[in-house]
Length: 397
Image (cartoon, rainbow, N blue to C red):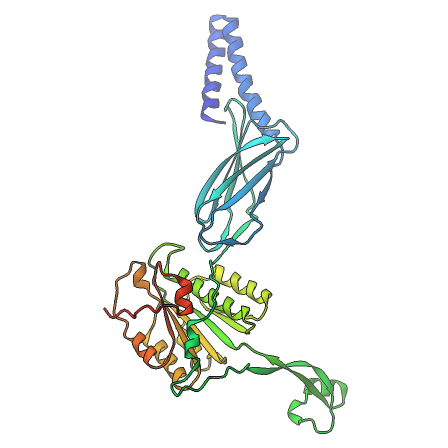
């Protein structure tokens, strides 16, 4: 019952008592009428039946920075229709209250989320409120949270890559990229003369009583790896204008460029948990974009562990996208360059997003070691920075 309904109920009760006390039938009739109207309003909402909600999101892929229109459709099967229906829910940290209009027995409406940031957002705290025509009674019901909103990063299409300038060594010779290959178990077969005993599949041999060997087939692996560093990322700015959002856009754009050239790529998201996605087709690209949409800067290990040591990546080329160029990471990149292994760096300048600027001595050192470096700053042309059309100077003070 609303505040107005309570006041009308009190006024009706007072009118009825006064009419009874003073013997005034008209006053008593007014009091009874007010009480009956409140009761009918309350009963009509209780007879409205089960609330059915249908939410319609845009069918196209949602990209960060775009406005998102959400259509709502509420059905009240059976009972007396409510005069006013409103729906309140929280999406992407924003509280959205929508008043629905009645058309052909249904209540419909829409709301717009402005400039949505990257991420996966659940539709939370869904409540529907029903009111009668006079605003005397109100019924609120919580509805199940069944929808989720996935907003993908805004990528750019690249005609070239800044790291291609590093495909020639200092003596002018061309670095040839080889497709790394391995072997996958395709099945087992009977042993034939000349087969190596190292290929014996002992479980099948024991089960069948005959010597069985592994039937292996060549399986290509990723040629390049793009590593998104989510370890200790500075938290300047607000989404989508943060250093980590810029890292996500850069990493996704580089992966997209490799896939369009027909190269098998590997996306490594150094967050918690760490995720690795093999990208060699459109399907793999969709999975990679899904991981980029939900990535958060909560990594537990430094990205340098992926360049050296037992956890290192076994690929021909590695591009690291980071906003935290630590000394161990710079050392690992320099060692790869000295060993004539592909290594490139995309450095997101966190200071340009509002932080204090500090000297970054590792950048000139990496460039001198032959590591291609692209510097991404707030407001810069990401396409130009990643293509190498222009070079930002390393901050020295």
